[in-house]
Amino acid sequence: GDTCHAAIVWVMKHGVVSQPECYPNLYQGSSWPEFQLHLHGNPQMMRAGNCEEPVHTCQKTQPGDGCYEEVKRFMENNITKLPGGKEWTIGDSFWDIQMLMHVSGVAGHIGGCYNPCPGCHTALPS
Image (tube, rainbow, N blue to C red; front, side, top):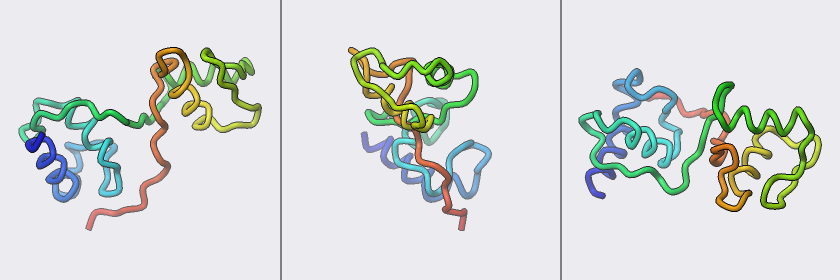
């Protein structure tokens, strides 16, 4: 709603610059869904508003995450055929396979995977 929109705009323009410790892994160059997901996951924040989980979110996987471990298992064991029929090719990147796992399967999100987030952010606080 309007409260969530206002909160995201404030965090994008001011919060990540003036209080970066409150917004770990967010930068001025982060996407709208990344900000929305952060505010949705932290409703205790005063400026969070009533943000719902974004429909299209991205995920930065790391060792220990369900998605990371599932992609790693498929890669290490050369399991190229995914549930749901999609296939990856030996030599594909981790992120390519994560994307396929996001869109594959009967219900999608194999291993809890979402879209991989874009690479490095080059925007710097002003």
